[in-house]
Amino acid sequence: MTEKKLSPKEQKRRHYILNGDLWKVILSISAPLAVYGLFNYLYGFFDLLMVSHIGGNEVASVVFIDEIKQAIMAFGGGIAAGGTVIVARHYGAGRIEEARRNAGSSFSLALLVSSIIVLITLAFGRPLLALLNAPQEMIDAGIGYFNIQMISTALIAVNSVFIGLEKAKGNTTLILLLNIVAMIIKLILSAIFVFGMGLGAMYVALATLIAQGLLMIVALKIMFSKNNSFQIKWKELGIKKYYILPILSLSIPVFTGKFLFSLGKVLVNSMAALYGPLAVAAFGIAMKLGGGPGSISIIFEESEISIISQNLGNRNLKRAIKTYVFSHLYALIIGGAALILVSNMMDRIIPLFTTSTDPYFRQMIIDIYFWEKFSVLTSASIAVITGVFIGFKYTKVAFILNVARLFIFRLPVLWLFQRSDIGYKALGYVMFISNGSTMVLAFVLLGFFYHKIKNYGYMDLQLDA
Image 1 (cartoon, one colour):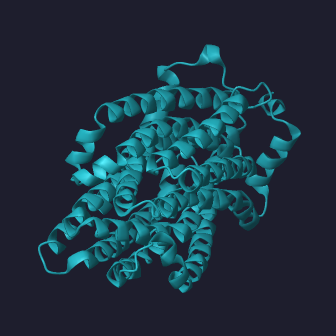
Image 2: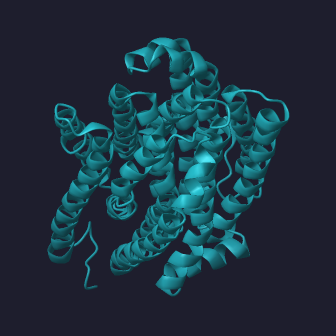
Image 3: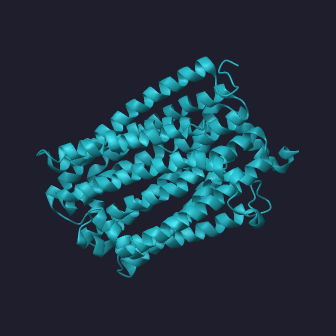
């Protein structure tokens, strides 16, 4: 009965995910997500690129504020991730009505939480930036940008739920197409505001807000459509304990971990401010250089979670484990290839970010990037391993990894470096050390997990069955 609620196209896609050639399944679902991840990266890339033509304080403030935005987005993204796991489990098991009801609960929860957080950040914007050690000139240059970006996080939370639900169905092509349109709108508006009208960084954020708002309108129309197998109904919206608690139990470790990880970057920027605004700007540019390859490689975590969840719902433990292995190989190969490409184009890319002819600033970027570039591979490994634990509903492990990366391997190490005469290069060193150490920890935890699965199974499933 429940299977008949799926369209023929959805039935075919579900059967493919559960029974098709796994190499092809992962690649076909991940390819649109990889392009989507690249476009998300380009959002920030072009923001920084355009703002670099306005002034140095604007660049530093955008770098600083964007990390705060990422931290706030973790709440909506974490709820979407938890909801995706539950929805995909039910979808894989053929319990479409349960999948639909959990989809509605994920939407309600994400909207409520993100709205509350946005109101708080808008009310305390300046004190928050000052608390994070942002220089006054950065606050003055970026407060308008900050306010608009905080509003956009509420829209992004809704869009994240929509994207998560479509990923749960394996419908990643739709995600790609809609985000290409949003990206084009954002770029056109940003170019008009900055180059055509000579406006400041605040209007770059406004372009993002408009693009995300248009995307949200389309997302809402699809989510509430009668033709959607996960149709959300207005009369069913609300915080219902039966559905909300399981989502929260998975989401809280995810969004807390993601928040702390993003907060770690904010705190690193705060500590980097001790080296001056140029160091903050150089650090941000170095992160953007590695962000392109990184955005492609870590996207395999997203597809992996959906595929693992569906196959566990279909009681296929062996295929779920294989999904991790294949996803990790894809992430390393594709991320490594993209990293080589970017590294070979450094001389062409760096001038795009600065009008300064100061060779010292250029050298700062190169020195930090030399160590930051390794994060493409280490972060990809961390992400894909984390995806295994999220897919198997062990989201607390994701929290542990993010906390360890921040409070054990990153902030204490940078604190020690700042008490030496290493200088700004410490920013590159600490990213290399923290990501590398966290990757080792992730592999250790994965080893224990696999040993447990191999010997005792998962729930009532056995690996050799």
